[in-house]
Length: 180
Image 1 (cartoon, rainbow, N blue to C red):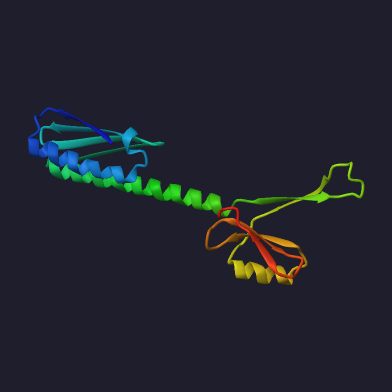
Image 2 (spheres, rainbow, N blue to C red):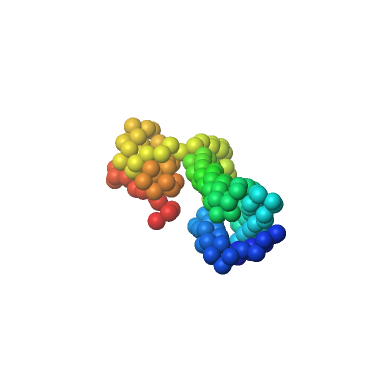
């Protein structure tokens, strides 16, 4: 992560520079593409107030935080806590979106009609869409056994992937798992 510092109205000690650099480098664990992340840290002193203004540009995020106190070290800690809270919230939000998108993905099935005349291509005679229910393979087999269908599309609760279980001619079941 590229961290740049701007100091206004004071000359920082080497210890303050090292402390700030070490503290803000910890934000890299929240960013996917650390090499392209930019962190601009503006530290300034106004009479008795020590102020920190931080801007983070990373991935698809643009976050900023501002804090002020009577001590520059405390100000750095406070603005870092504020930025970490924003990053955690952003990460949880993204996790929720991907999990929700994965769970609510609909499956579309098309029915084909075959005629005796093989010169005519099969046509789609019906369409159905539904949300596949999460279940284990054994549970899907039991449910297919009670239904009057040849196959069942379900979400495998162990792998989170869409699977198809079907009845074979000999009475056994077959499983299609496109993820493996």
